Image (cartoon, rainbow, N blue to C red; front, side, top):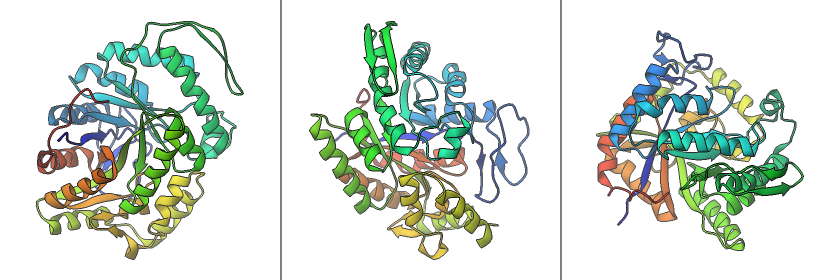
Length: 369
């Protein structure tokens, strides 16, 4: 039986040992660790983490995009010569760069890396942040534009002449570049009706955040049904944190330690800020616990403590190596094939998972991407 595919997260906004305090503002080029166990996103640290992921057998590293982190393209390009087989799942936002230029950038990256590129399409969870980038479109319009963006990008990646006329883009006499073969796999997330519709028509892999299995199953069924209308089959992945230790008690203690020094006022302020984001997926994450420390255990070994303070993926699999493996199997039984994982700090947790949990599964067959 083919095993699951495990990838890791590249913390280009910084890393830390606890969730107390922020790491935003630390940038590549910083040479000293700030106090409090925080680590800046220096090229040295990101290289160390990428090389560890490469050596430990992770399929890829996911880089985020947004005002809180370094540019995903530039950062990962710097890591190409420092790694051997590791793929780069580069996040990008349609609308901030033209689809034709995106295809040219992707082609260059793919050739320089020996084909080690995939694309994570991010629509943006904050209208305010998008306006700060010069993008005035609202939530649903951004998804409509993304559909056109992906249509053009795929044509451009194929290296064939084309024209396109749409509401958001017009391309006349699209200039063919050298085709990218195989084309990068397109990953796509989002929980709104607009997001699911675009994913069903254009994504190769639909990514969900780590909700309890019953909620994940319902969402995947919706994507499957929508994809069938287009005669397509979409694969599925999940984005989760992980805290795994030899024993259940050690893992629970490590989870509790992440919240050391975090008071209720800090949690309330952060929850209010996250509630202001224009993201269906973020609201679903927040609704799982409601900002209540007493509601953090959502399902066996599924803990929402990270979501008290951090946006995006807010849940973690917490437990012994055997328990975490069982929870991964639960998601596999729903149809999840790819697991994009992270932990605090990312370097140490990458080792803990790769050495304690990954060996409990058969290896994924390479080439299935």
